[in-house]
Every structure is written in structure tokens, then in C-alpha cells.
Image (cartoon, rainbow, N blue to C red; front, side, top):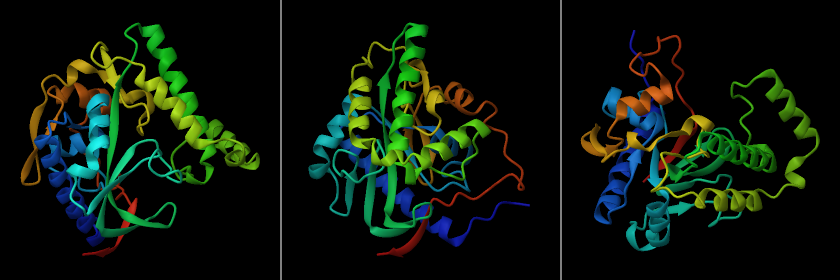
Length: 275
């Protein structure tokens, strides 16, 4: 039996794929050094596009180019696109940047908020080369990331698979109303300063510690190499040159497909209207 995506998922993937093509055209034009990461790279390598049951796209950009894009996005992007992050919108929930398409209105399932179809941009930062110092740095960032989540308590995914201890901790923090006495944006600013202190060019291990996979988001910079082109739908995108090393680091046996019973269609968003 073959996985059959819902009409909503097919529509969302089509809209996101068009966004990706438009965005990488901008990146290529202005020499922004991007590459697909995580499940988006896995989809390109294994499926030639989206993972059939996935509904979001993740793009990594080394810090200097990430900042260059943010500083010029008003001039470079078509008017139907706009970006948001915690610095541009004080009510924004996340550290990372999202590029939104005003022409595709969606409902975010977890929060029930009405928003727009989007792609996620992750700054790729360096880490200390000394293993001990690198681990200290990683856990320091993860600690502040935890505080930011507690400051944004209503946005914590209560359905995510967690250990019993983690679930108990989150429940206790809910009773303490952490969102009332922790300032999410101050914490994000502190994280931002810590990440920017690292020298990407001199770092042997790089990544985005604000991504979904936490510590696993840090990988050997040599995986990126000179980048390589991969098919995504009917066009090509850049990804790490050593895709095999990167994907094994992230997913181990990444070529093994889950069974039809193991597949769960992602439902982060539901399309409401498309112009």
C-alpha cells in the first residue's frame, strides 16, 4: 500500500515548493550561501522533493549571509512575501525567521491561529572546537532555549513524545505560570548574542541549536563542503556536499522507509484560502 497525501497536504506542498523556488532565486541572485537541512534535505535526496507526508521546509544559512538577507529582504523579496522573527515582531513565538506568503492563508493547527504559508530559515552558527567547551556551550544554549519555551508556555507542543520526567516538569511549570515572569524576547536576545560570538569560519562543528533536533543539529562543517545540487520537484536546490554524512548523523539509516502503519501525515497547517 502506498501513502496517499490529503488534498490539503498536496495543496500546501505545492504552495511551499513555489515559495522555495522564488526564495532560492533571490539567494542565488544575491549570493546568499544557503542549503537545505533536516527533513527538507532528506526529501530532496530520497524523494526528489518533499517527503510525501511532510508539510514544512527548512533552510540553513551561515550567520553572516543570514544577517545579510534579513537586512536586505525589503529590497530583495517580491511584495507578496515578508519575513518575521522575534526582533521584527515582539509577539512572534520563535527564535528562527519565517518567510511568509501573503497569498496563501493557513490555520496553524496547534495554536488555531490564522497565518500564512511559510518557510523556516535557520541561522547556522559555529561552536567551540574543543569538545568539552563545545558541549558546555551546547547545553548552555539548550538551557536558555528551555527558559524561552517556558516563557512562551502556551506554545509548547503538548502532544510531542517526551520522557515522563520531562512531561512532569512541563506540568509543574504550567502551575507556576512561567510565562508571567520570564521574558521570551530578553532570553532570545541573550541566546542570539551567545550564538553570534562563535566564529563560523574557524569552527569545525556548526549548526542551529534552535532547531527541532536540539544537540543533533550540530554537525561537522566539512559535511557542507562546497555544497551540491539536488533535485527538488522540477528545479535544483543546494544542500551539503556530503549529504550521506549529514543525513546519517541526523537520521542513521535514512534510506529506510517507514511502513505505511508508521507514517503519520504532518498537520502543522491547514490551507484556508489561496489567491
